[in-house]
Amino acid sequence: MSVELLENERLDELHRNGYFIIQNPAKFCFGMDAVLLSGFVRVKPEETVLDLGTGTGIIPILLEAKTSGKHFTGLEIQPESADMAKRSVMYNKLENKINIEIGDIKDASRRFGASSFHVVTTNPPYMTGQHGLTNANEAKAIARHEILCSLEDVIRESAKLLKPQGRFYMVHRPFRLTEIMVLMHQYGIEPKRMQLVHPFVDKEPNMVLLEGLRGGNPRITVEKPLIVYKEPGKYTDEIYDIYGY
Image (tube, rainbow, N blue to C red; front, side, top):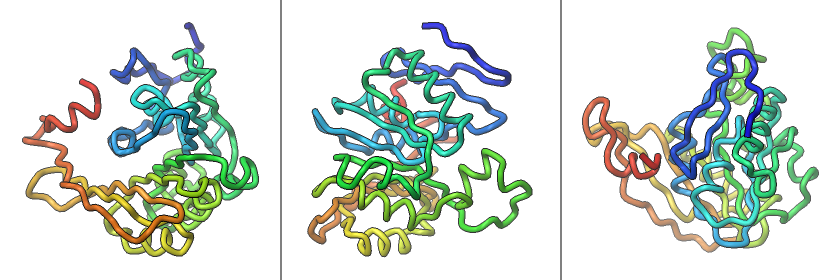
């Protein structure tokens, strides 16, 4: 269907089910981390999913394409991003499967109610504080830095939102892995799967994908590393498969 594109917006192909997404490069565009998270998440038939800090809705749209989940909700605090997400949902005719809400992660459990979702996903801000920021209200800064919510906010609210034995999925940076694990354990989400993402086979990891289980028993599976590039400018077969090229 036809939707209006505003100034500086563009329509990008997602290479899944013929879906497209509206983005504004001047604000923020999704990155590889969101796509890799969508490939790591497992959603079963009849399950409901909440994506915290959904941005322009990339993760709900990709999960709708890749999984057999029943319904997907995206929560986003920035109205402009949420508006783009809503228009992308309309463009792809997914109004019956995906709902975009404007709101604060810190209030998510009060908004949706405790034990409301089978799966919670998130690609939260990676950087602590406001080091190096010139404008803390800029859309890109809010997406990258913990200005409006902290890592603890994300994990605490996820624990409340998940049904018993519900699953939590997150992409983050390895340098914060200890903090992530401690907070997950503190709020009753037991780490169950972990995969490190390396830009090249001989380089240290720059992303980590995590799955946790609310109320799970202690036991974690560390999956084989995911390598992004086989050579400069050329993805590995695993990455091409995740993207759907």
